Length: 148
Image (cartoon, rainbow, N blue to C red; front, side, top):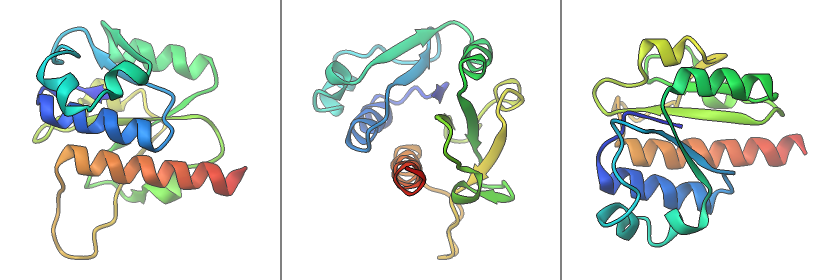
């Protein structure tokens, strides 16, 4: 789930990574999200055509519905105490990525079961959102394989 990501290059790269790591789909907002065509489609190298995606009006309500269907949500935040590896389990999981700078909005975070970070022992405190999404998707795919 992408919370107010507007950069077409980042969103396109996230679509590519999501497809590569076996995500079931991507959820974006109706507003505050770029059209999934033109430059974004080009940046995704065709992933927008192959990966299911949904545009929703309200991300918090979408998370409530997903929770009712057995999904859990993890908001990504570099200041979190838990690592993503610690937060993941065998249940289907929505990874929520926030915009660079603002991160995941408070009301969206409140609908997440956990807040997690990518540990970065190299001393640098942040990553480009598309890089962070790729790492999170990789870790989630590894967790699903370990639990299976």
